[in-house]
Length: 146
Length: 146
DNA sequence: TATTGTTATACTCTATAACTATA
DNA sequence: TATAGTTATAGAGTATAACAATA
Image (cartoon, rainbow over all chains, first blue to last red; front, side, top):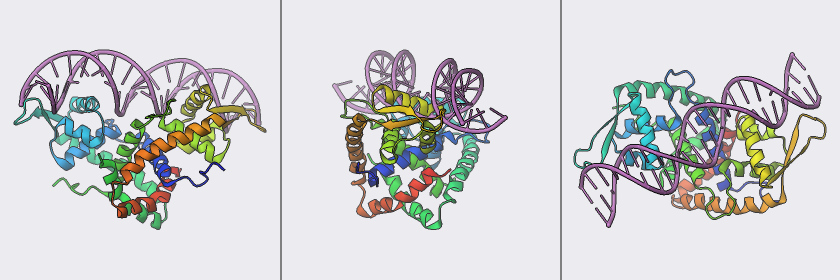
C-alpha cells in the first residue's frame, strides 16, 4: 500500500549500513586495555596501510572535516599512538605517522573486532558470505567516492 | 611489510561501512524543511513497513538500547510524526504508530537521500553496481543478526 | 520476581565558524 | 589571497544506571 513492502535497493543499503555501523561502534574495546574508537582505529589502520600522511589527507580519506581529524590525531598523540612531524617542503603542513606502540595495539584491536564481525558473518550461509565478499571492493570504492 | 597491504576482507567491510554510515548521517536534511536524523528516518521507515510496534521492538530492530529509542520516539511524537497508544493486552507496553503526516515526509526524505546515494552508486561501473545489489539481502541479514 | 518503559546523567563523535601561520 | 591546520563552541546520538508500573 505504501510502496515499500519491498524496500527499494538504495534504501535497503542505507538501512543496513546504518545499523551495521552502529553495532560496530558499540562493539569496541571489549578486551583490550586501552580504549580505541572505531574512527581512531580506522585512522591508525590507514596510517599503517599508506604510511605517513597529513591531517588533511586523513580527513579526506575518512570523510570527516579537518577539525574532527585534528581532534582524533590529538587524542592518539596523547596516548603515544602516533607522532606529528614537520612536512619536508611545506611549513603549514604536518606529517602524521604511526608509532611502534600503535602497531601492536592495532593488531590486537583488529583481532577482537574482526572476530566479532567474523562471528556474525559465519552465521550467514556460505552463498551470502560469498556475495558479501564479492561486493567488498565495490563497497570500498563507493565509500571512497568524492 | 606490515601485512596489510591488502586489508583482510572483514576489516575492509568494517572500514567501508563506517565511512559510508558517516557520510549518510551527514547527508541528512538537505532540502526538506523539517530536520530528520538518519535513525529517526529509519524508525519511521520501519513503522511504515511493519505497522505499529512497541518501543522495545523498535529498539531491537535498530539495535539501539531502549532508552535511546525512548528518546527518538519522544522527538518524533513532539513533531507529530508518530503517536503512542496503549497496548491492547499488556498495560506495560506501548504501541507506537506512524501518523499520516509522517508518510509524506518520509517519502520526501527518502527521495532526497536515496538520490544522494544513488548518485554515488551511478559513479561505479555497472559490474560493481550489480555486485552491491546482489549482496544487499545478505547485508540486510547481517545487520539483523542477533 | 521479571519485564517494559522511562528518567537522569554523561560521554563520544562530529560539525561549523573563527583564528593563525605559512605559501 | 589562498591553503593547512587548529581552537572554540555546539549539537546529535547513544549508552549505563536507577526508577516506576505492570505482569
